[in-house]
Image (cartoon, rainbow, N blue to C red; front, top):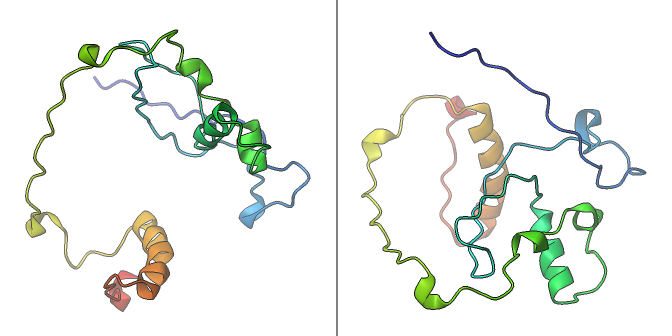
Length: 151
């Protein structure tokens, strides 16, 4: 028997600018978006450390800004983002000879047969391509036009 699934509401977060106007559809930037896992690799992080806290993309900006005294916050987002400094908790960096040996794995060859043809784009694919296509058309990158059936 399959375990029941539950949907929990996204946690509240502090809006980027509480006095600012709401965005599209009344969105006030007071909710966290999708969760994006991250891997932090540093000799300043103790071996086998797992962090389960919630950080923001702007946490990296805040951490770098504070570490190298780059001045005031760039935006309200990095001003309120939690710093990653507590994650870098080793008193001294681990010695290079104690770092794991990593061997890059080859990338498998591209298989055109894995791409579905003739299927309409999903909502996410349409949104992503609508953002990247104008940029690609202004760059030197070749950018095919999507057929009308895929819009």
